[in-house]
Image (tube, rainbow, N blue to C red; front, side, top):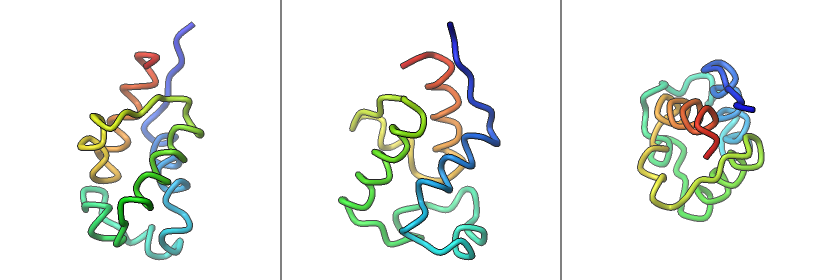
Length: 88
């Protein structure tokens, strides 16, 4: 059985995973294409924690090779909607 994840649901997953690294107001003001690591001052451990939160929320295995696809909210949403649909 194939699962799907809508773009809106993926956006919610990404923003929820970013909580704790930024306030709700900062997340609301964050441009969808803005680089997350620079905008939120995420260090390597913060980014790894973010990736782990995405994995727990979606069940999608995210390998280190996938990290370049997790640059912005938009790119994270694209990655997640594609990955969930292909049952990675």
